[in-house]
Length: 75
Image 1: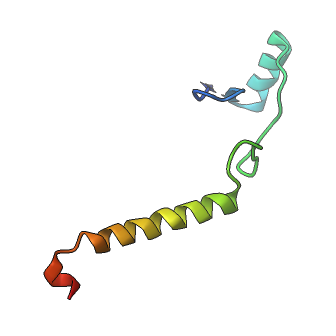
Image 2: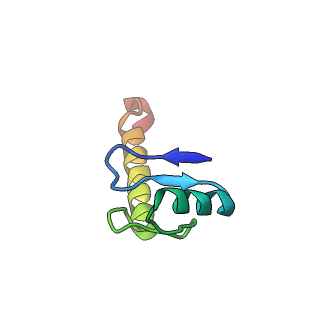
């Protein structure tokens, strides 16, 4: 069983089998929702925004690498 919380999140994750989760929900009157690899949050970047951001980081890295070449390799 795994309990996880990130620093500034408004929720925490409980990862376990269905049976154990059902017992926890019943015993502690927990509220929540089930999520999987496709679940998104409104305060996270969308998959497209993440893709664009990573492409920009890669572009910036390539530009910095070009800027750091010795002068004799630029000519």
